[in-house]
Image 1 (cartoon, one colour):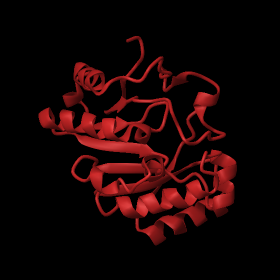
Image 2 (tube, rainbow, N blue to C red):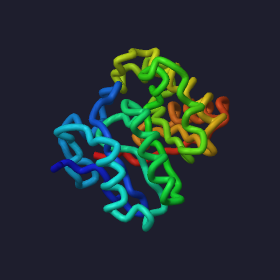
Image 3 (cartoon, helix red, strand yellow):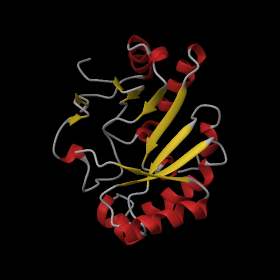
Image 4 (cartoon, helix red, strand yellow):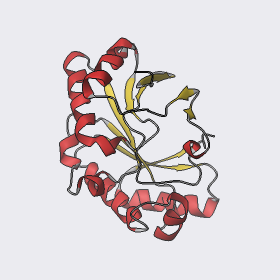
Length: 200
């Protein structure tokens, strides 16, 4: 397969399982290019679990500090395959696993999947992106509309019961007033806030 599945960034090995996403964020790099972090991440087809596991070990996963599910799409679009990939990796390698997500897993699956992540995912980073429903809908252009905002926050609340570390993230281009509102949201939910650099 000519597509990139596992790709290193710093001390993390990232995994690209899908290009599907429930959001079409205005700032997303994939609207302008197939390349992310210097890699061509646009898939001709989605890899099988076997292909993903094989590539993860071929890239020397044991040399990295963490395995990160974050490609050019929303990893939970392939939720069961993602968890099966993690199980197989963790059977042979004790590595920290992080999920970078838009928080729509429960909407995508049509059920609460947060309990299924217990013991498999160590950190979840959820893209908050906005301080309220209206701005979220404007920025993220979700297939779920403004309801995607509420579902994302509900996912964060539920996930923290099963995953040791849950983080809500925003990009650094947000104004100070909205940043403070986002901080208040994370404090209310009881999770961490991370302000990340906008990747172009």
